[in-house]
Image (cartoon, rainbow, N blue to C red; front, side, top):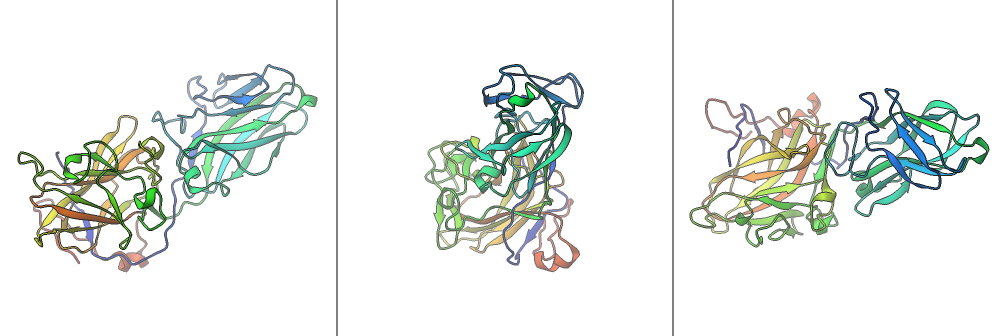
Length: 391
């Protein structure tokens, strides 16, 4: 397929070890400040009945109309991640610390409310701490995410609140003015390490996305056939064929979701929020089983938004010599990074079979000046030629 070339790309030969960490960007999830639209919020469960409206800009109103003061739970839709997103899947709050609700009611006294999420492949219901006494009028309530597992925090299907019985207050009108994710974002996220004990028995959700015929052992579908986990290296491994039918030498394109299990399909791996980062680094090696050398071009790509828009972050040349190299791609040209359906590597054509190992997929912000020595000096691909040099 066609490949986008950038005026400057990076090939880094070594990256000093640092601790794994996880993060993404804090943001406003819902504001209801546009045309009247409740943005897929609904009654989730409970005894009381409610009407929801957005007749007042900037407010979601929940009007109780059932048995006076009975309990009711309200949430967003299970395929609505936030207000501006129309791509179905899970909300990725990896690395963040809190959800914040600007919430209140028109009653005279406090009403106990349980804030919750439903997350992970099992749609698990998790309370965000103990019940909170919500006061009359609108106030901000900050709920910790510390009790969530990684699988729950990276794939949140609903956020909501469960209004407890309040018979003494009778039926109330509740108002939500904003819902936000909050916390101090970190600077590094390891999307995949392929270490022993990582998800999917070390495969971490990777699958063959297209040109699957290049992967020896793949059955021609978007799945994990043909992949293996190299336990001694702690890496993803597959053999990419050279000529695999009537002169077809195209390499495979492999894809990652959010780093959790594939589970027979990729839906539970979507979407991933990578908006906090400036670079992605793939630690990769290529080996010719017959002892040949040469090199292969490797493109980092993204599919974003509800339309799975294909975007390339650039191409780098990987030596076929069995050595792990850090291929570092800038993300400045990739748009809509908060709505990443898939990300991965797309191998260019190559004549011989090559064994590929991926040891690490790491996202990072722009390095601080003091850390430049760690990542080394970038090799520059000039727009006018194709020469690369590794420093």
